[in-house]
Length: 257
Image (spheres, rainbow, N blue to C red):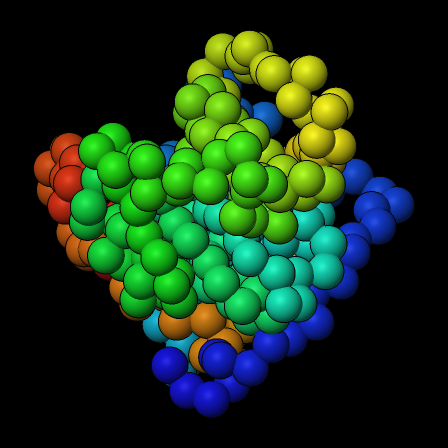
């Protein structure tokens, strides 16, 4: 990455005064139909022009990058902070990069597979911990006040919050980006209260989508490490199978020519 990618940038708080213009959703029952159909009509305000020189593979990451930017803005000022990112899928990995750009001095990423953790280091993580076999690496200071100022929870795994509550500093903030499968999970409210944690939600994005496109066009964020494969539309079945194997891939691009 170039010098621009390493310099901290200001990612300030977001105030939303109008509903999001973006109708897509990663939920099983989306808010609107997606692009897997013969025709698609979009409004002019949903279209952002990009130069021909910019890779279409790169700009397809504008959506997860916008999610990450929104989550980091919900976290507040990260300058000089120590950050934990739980879950190293596309959003988690882009949270790692965005937190670095926002001035974090130390970012630690977790996952249950080694491959995404290798990529997390490429995206700027100083530490990468496989919590399926080395969770103790994060809990050595349990009871001593915790290691991290902010946690960005991007896994949607109920166990992640339990881990976060053990390693977060008193008065720390948790930003919940990952969607839990059932929507309801047990929560240690006593620990939340006694250690005065802030627990805030982060859902999709708004103005951040334009920010994400601008950052990709400028090369501020290099998404090459998370683009695992490009597969033609004729082999869509195998593309989805490969995309579901997190031991090998992070994000698979389905090429429509």
